[in-house]
Amino acid sequence: MPSDVEYSPVGEGLGMRDYWLYVWLRRAAVIAAHVTGLGLTLIISLLSRPGTSLFSWHPVCMSVAYCLCMTEGILLFSAEGSPFCFKSRKCKVRLHWFCQALVLIAAVTGLGFMLASKNVSELPHLVTWHSWLGISTLVATVLQAACGICLIFPKLLRLSSPLRLKLYHATCGLLVYLLATVTVVSAMFSDWFQATVKGMAWWGFLLLPLFPALVVMNQITNAYLPRKKITS
Image 1 (cartoon, helix red, strand yellow):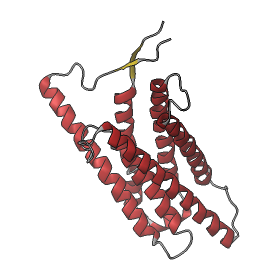
Image 2 (tube, rainbow, N blue to C red; image 1 turned 60 degrees about the horizontal axis):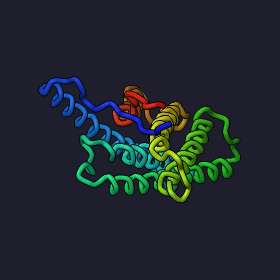
Image 3 (cartoon, rainbow, N blue to C red; image 1 turned 30 degrees about the vertical axis):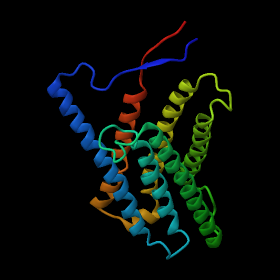
Image 4 (cartoon, helix red, strand yellow; image 1 turned 90 degrees about the vertical axis):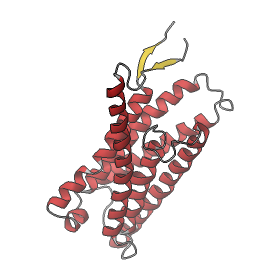
């Protein structure tokens, strides 16, 4: 069975004027996603006041991992609005590895600060939906990274269908990113965040992580959504 998959081209069936409008809207959306991810990370870091407690480093590390590094690691493959749009595919892949490595380092560090904070305060672990979602996200991130490592060495691992594995890697990456987004949103229902941010500002924070998620979902589905599978 051949492993080739034909992908639906972006903007197929659009007129020239509609196509350029579509491209510019996508470009604006990608730029806004970059700004949103960076802005959310900076604001959460400021609200956390890192250094005031062990726990204060947890939101900083996790926002750097998932709001910034994971978002940038995916959006750098976008053809519109990415600061790395002029780089070669090989360079983008290497930057993607680097960003995802930072995701793992920052996420594990953030988990360590949370565990240390809980132990010092003698509080129980894994008692909230956010904690369970966080652990699930971290496990999924590690598994996704392992899949990415397999794509780095397809010949060494004797993979029979690296193109199909690449498709699965992108699809699972989208699921991991959406799970991370749900985890970030659930953090905004925590006692710490609700005590720090109140009123209309809280609703604004609640919606912010959803925008980059929509842009990432649109990017991956446009790039990897199969139009027709060639089967024997």
